[in-house]
Image (tube, rainbow, N blue to C red; front, side, top):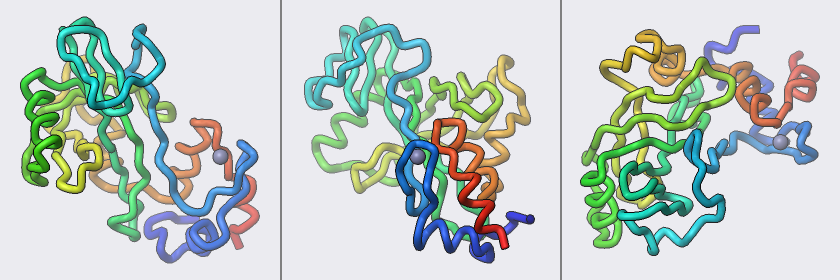
Length: 203
Ligand SMILES: [Zn+2]
């Protein structure tokens, strides 16, 4: 079945109205974010400190920020994959992306002063290994501050490091959007298998 335009799919309507029972034991109604708990290869504390207690000169992790020995800096960002035909609805990951210390500092200051701007952007490097995709670590992009205070949106773009394919499928999926079958595949990669219920809705 084609998934070129999810808005025309009965399964998409069913997912958003009644939801699908899932292998995790819950019933999910519509899309929900898939959250990465820590950056890949993180060996610091697993317990989050409050965001406000961030320290840039030591090892720290909170829901939004991460510092390794005062040397490496990362932030939680949202990485959207538009649902084809249902824009702006997007399959959403929250991921970790490495940033420059100065950009992190500027972000924290802007957030505290309520001066985040949607057009303020800074370079970011993905440090999450996202299941269901060809290795995603080190993919480069631009992070956009969000005036509403939600984590920055990460758009993968530009020259990619030699360790990643230049035609990395995740860049393509972010540019072109995905269909429902791909979304269900990506959920299943994180222990949320709704495919049996979805295929029962296939007619
Ligand atoms: Zn589930």
